[in-house]
Image 1 (cartoon, rainbow, N blue to C red):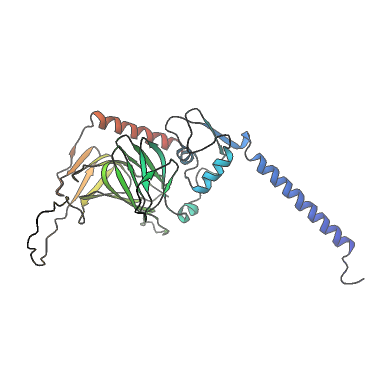
Image 2: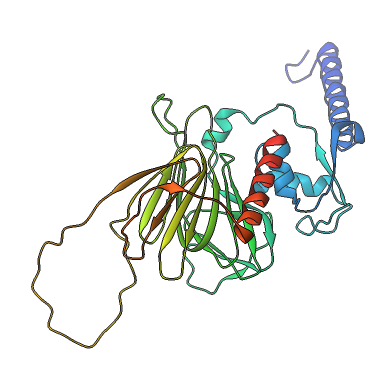
Length: 330
């Protein structure tokens, strides 16, 4: 027999393998079709304040562009997942595990997600000098991006370490850095983030990530608030005066060497030669239900007890309700 001819047993084996391969592909196709069936999806009835990204973080523990694409495929009965309404039904593919693998969370790019927007909320990409544009919910924000609210606006950002930042009306926030640590040392922070609050009111809930405390700092015009797991509110007035109120845990507030009150421009005058200007540095530890007020010149008071009233109380209660609801989903 020629060496170029294939024996009958060999051909039979080849045909059998080909048939098995085709059958496997058909089976896989059937499984893919079934993956969107009612038996393999979790059904959500949209409530007031829900968005696709918010529900995804409650259910899966994270939200990414690729996950959003999957959710769009599973919810083709809705025209736009960025515009869902109370009473709508969402279908989420059933998660295979309670949490994403830690290796995946460490390797993925860090980002923040706009999970709620009310009123006028706008944003601007980091390298851009263009004007702010309307910010759609489910928007993924990255370092150097900025977000602002108008007088009727509110916005909620959830970081991928599950920490939350919310802006009230007339507020402006810049995401300076977002970074995961790849170190496995016990002393290393699992997550590091820096923000700059130029104006307005910011509610912050910092959560433990991968069993390690994150390091999150919010820079105010005249101070820097650094935390590793707590709930607090920072307020910056138009004249750069600021206040930090702590609701859980403790916050370390320190002077901001680069900050200070806005300088008034006066008439020309002779400028003295170079001289060393002593910089007053300070650190204050603010405990739960204490408030620290920093004057527009950067001088701090002493931590003291506080009580919320009026609009402050409504804002605080709304944030606390959102915090509880987000935690219930995990």
